[in-house]
Image (cartoon, rainbow, N blue to C red; front, side):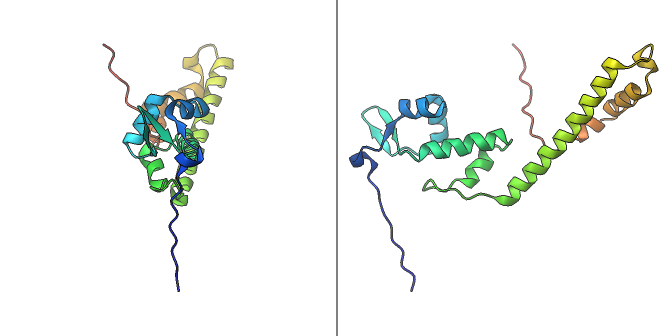
Length: 162
């Protein structure tokens, strides 16, 4: 026999609510971003009290998860799939492994570029045109090999300047 119990906690009556300014202060996330996160369903307020949105303390954990996901290169949509409507967390382990693999590939690429730059800076050849290592790096860049190594990385498009 399976029994389901639903519990509704009234945070307001227990004095466990924070207004949007308090959440912004404690989390370091601007109020405008909190409103955006609420609009797209990443977090939920427990209702306005007067003019200010009110949040349960669990919102701080949700914001920490959002920040961690963004630091790992996850999109807000990917983070959203890991947050359940009630504020719980449902981690997609396969997504995390794939993201870790992408990060490892990026690290390898950046290390190779770093080695190439250090070599170019310290190269004893009379000119960079005479350095075989530098020439290989140029050919690799010209062939698009460096760009192909970035596949899987989400890079925001550059904005046109006015």
